[in-house]
Image 1: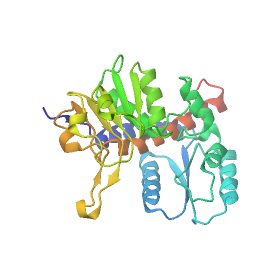
Image 2: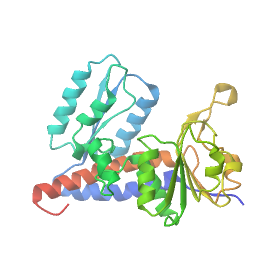
Image 3: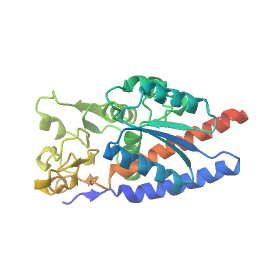
Length: 293
């Protein structure tokens, strides 16, 4: 058996066409959805992510603002800019690209973003809303994973879901979304004893630890849905190619459905960022006109 591969690029394209139509409808009512992105430093990966986000906005009919600061920037300067963006009614989403240089308190920066413009879903208020099952914004990567599962008609109610990774960005919000969908959820991490014991029970396995090819085929339940969130670059002596946390070649012979790296979850993350920005703009318009959000 060879697993069916989910094409994140194809699904992302479909969703972005839908977003473009919604953005056009808003523009016809005088509102152009706008995402403001702040980048501090010269980290090459961060620069690529920001460039892709800005390009994604343009293609979907959203407006983007980009502020770039040097690595030695004064945190007070960035915080002042966030305050300006919070107060600007024409800005609907604010994103500060992580990681930040060491002089920054990342938690304080994220908390400075107005919750109603926190399209990454990282503000404590939005995290709490997600925990309560009434999210304002769903963190983009888990949101994209849920869209992929929906598209593939993966049965979630009663399924055993195992998440490898407990980050605030992926692991924890992913667990809340799957739990709300009716899964029995196990979260594994660096202290988990006998990881393979847990992964072999999973009907749905989500790998999000940042360790290349950590999950191998013999750790997967036959027919399972395997979602690989990781993106790693192999050393030059191993070819220097991008790969996920899952050993794709061995896993695809066991799994029923699998996401590749690249071309799987990655494109969906940016698409869901655009979705959150658009939803924020729609809410702002509804509030301004007194309509229901």
